Image (cartoon, rainbow over all chains, first blue to last red):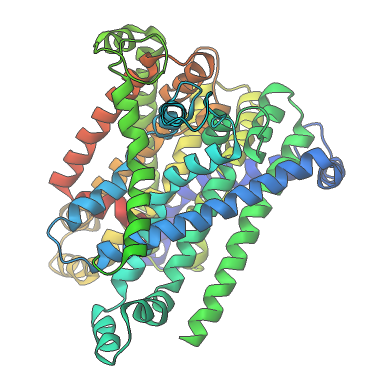
Length: 276
Length: 264
């Protein structure tokens, strides 16, 4: 080996050791062979969870909320990204910054905002009472709706950023060409812009799903004890009951869920990519 | 936006969901009431005074800042050489190596946090601080590698070869040519890493101990116990700090470039 080819290895070595010892190996051990639990024990617990109605409800809630938030983030995020990417306004930069800024702000602060709005004496409940719809503020906090709103707020900036770079890559000249050939604005959007930015839209959907299906702060603060998700279960198995087998099984389900949805998404892009 | 009522409506709704809850937090921080109740009553600054003198918050703030600085420095110290090797070296299985360093992005953080709790804190009997520095550095490494890598990929390797050809040593070439090329990338990665570590919840939640708490976890526990406007005041202070960081980012490398470039 020449000196030239040996140098990269020496640069790489500290990083490799760190990522293996601090991430890959501990995660592998935790998922498949935690201390005092056999791999068989984990899969037995996994089988129980998949058939137990209580655990099934938690898995389905996690999957369902993840998919709903993903859909809402695309429906609200793509239009923002599209308008920003195609805007000629001098304020477009300010609007883009306003969409990215929430990403820098603590999740705890952003989620707390929903408690202020949805709480029993909160702004929305009091408004509903004030307008005379009901005598008493409806239960808004500690519901699945609260979790969905909270997660949408957290992950919308991420959806906008990845849709924005996808739309920005599509030459605006193509929009003009389609319009010049007589296509309506709506038709141009559906037949030109969306198909060409599909890979970016799928990336954005995957990121939002992975984030919402594994988020902890939101279901903990807004879901209460009756709307448990896999993340809050995982925490109580590890910190409250110290049940390694259940913690590993929950972690496995969570990881598989994220990989499954990412896998399905990347398959759809590949097919779309062949068409366009 | 004209003639596009549906797109416009969705966009407005999106901005409302992102921004309005933050405005409510700021508004209720000034209320002269013991609880988070509407309509707002009076105007007071006392919640800010209480938040600033509440020791669990102040000591957690110092812990969070220290942890963020330490993990950012470590992630850059480990990540930059990796970036150099991936971008400039001839290594076998380059995309596989890059994938390994980006993989903490796809594994749920709670899973990694639990693994480190189980094996570093319980198994090896290490303190929460040791486990936290490892855990946060693991989360930050993908940013360090990807963001500095993006700026190096844009730079022409010929410039470095020219320096070598003109007789500069490899070390001198690195210091005087490669490092300046990397500077915007390093700055972006540092800012992104610092913010990510400072705001982290899942990792810090699992890797806490009686005498080491980060600010987000302390605030999370506080909210769970009582809903008073003091937490809104603390949140507003954090918001102000975050705005300052955003302005610094905008004046240096460009805000959208740093934080918008994450997924490019």
